[in-house]
Length: 142
Image 1 (cartoon, rainbow, N blue to C red):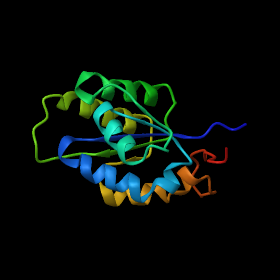
Image 2 (spheres, helix red, strand yellow):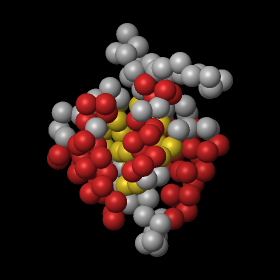
Image 3 (cartoon, helix red, strand yellow):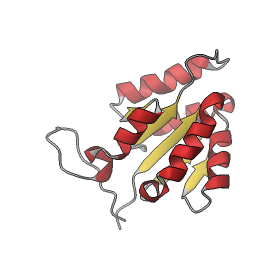
Image 4 (spheres, one colour):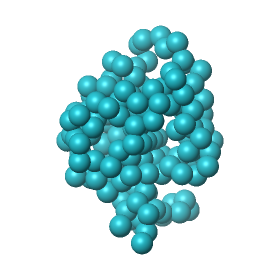
């Protein structure tokens, strides 16, 4: 059996409602993935979409960002959707920057807002379609 790809969902406080709405609208597509999320975001998503296979990790400021970063470094994530709030100072901003840096270093598909998240969910890399990219494709068949 082929393991389903893993997708991380993260949202700053001011963007949590947008993340929950995005997940609810796309729950059919997201059900093809094993999902992980930082704690508070994951709890809010599960309250709205309890049927999803989502594992909440620690809250971002309490280590959840580092847990996801570890998954990136170990090659255990296939994509990251992180709804950032660029207008509010974050006390754990260094953690957020480190997470985005790891996604860039490991060439992980990453969406930082609603528009790119919608595009990412339709991307060939996440849906297993063939592309002209030299990056290996992933399969979403279970």
